[in-house]
Length: 537
Image (cartoon, rainbow, N blue to C red; front, side, top):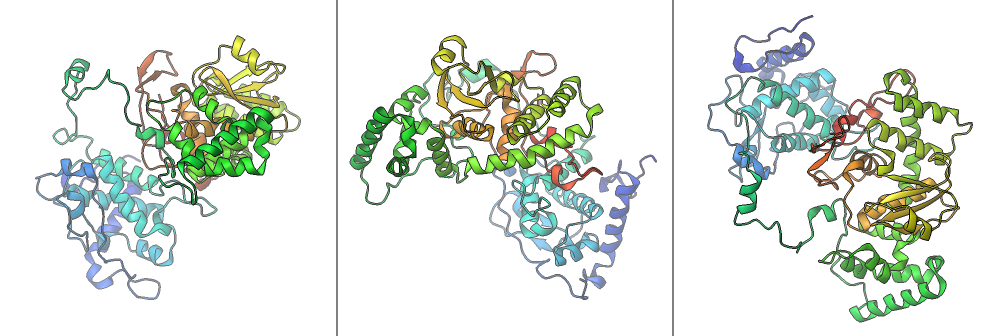
């Protein structure tokens, strides 16, 4: 069926929606006429509590630039929810018209149930109309503030949760996506209120008074502390002084020189590494930035699996070995099952890899984790050598550094005939091996050290593998900052043409939102928003 028009005037911005989308809108329009009589009764005949309470919303800093002097939207109605006025920003004046929402929605709020899809679509249409009273074309940041306050107010009804009740990322990504899509839809023919920034040429930037292109880096960037909760502690451990910490550092160096990296298992070494965490961060975060070799020279125990994992735990509050190890098995199998259940849908590279996976007689935990990562790299069209280096199983640290021409960006070195069957791993960075893992370690242990090194050593994701690394961060390790990224490259290589292009940076939502919320008949998960969740070329 074709599109229909709902309403009689263009001002209600209801043109171009389907009949299915129009039904809840008509119901919501009818419900607004009987609001005074019905007053949103709940299942017991009472109005849900707090529905008309004042909600305080902190304005987005960028929203002040969006303040519009245009007259109110003709189809907007008076609201019952008013934000406290403490800013000149239009967001602080926004009124959410709760009384116009479909009657079924307050029932769901009262019971703590999920909102029905039709009610959710209708709510988004009404909320965007209210936003357009103040700004005809709100920016994404303002849409996010509105979505955030709705989710924070009624998380059980609107927040993003997995089937196990685990909150996905910021919790409001799916609502933000729908609000912003609606804003773009109603402004598709609006050429007078498009928000554009004046372009500046490279020469203008170089000649600007504040230009500092040639001066050395004097302060750390925000990307260095991205996702960290204890990036640079300021207070010394109780009972410690700078002199005592320096003494413990020398003791650690003496132990390492006499016993080697295996001494990291000693209890006293573990205690000293914990106490000197502040000193380690001061060295790593110093400006000028030190090379990894210089850091390793002063803190050699940091470049062991246990030392780096313990440091990552203090830095982010996450036991990366446990979390990533479990996720690679459970979520890795979901990914494999999904791709395997739709073989004909994928390109030749993915189909070939699926056949290789299925040819394995026993899919061990090591192979599950490796296969899941390789499948996602194929999906994102990222080369395997952008993360992995395959080397002969007899290779040593010295032979690899001398013969393999290791890249500057971190790589996981896999010793074996192929990526799926390897049982030995090393991690390299800045052209040298920085961590050697024991033979009893697993692929999850190796991946934990490899991924943890980006955070511990303040390293950025390489552009050639940024999508896969972002996937590991958000989906497997569950580090979900609301803004920012560990890849700040402004250019990249097109996966289609191989040419250098301007890299598109997308706001990262919770990866695989639909992997839990939509199920196929084979009980595999839908990955429909993979491309929305990560940077794409």
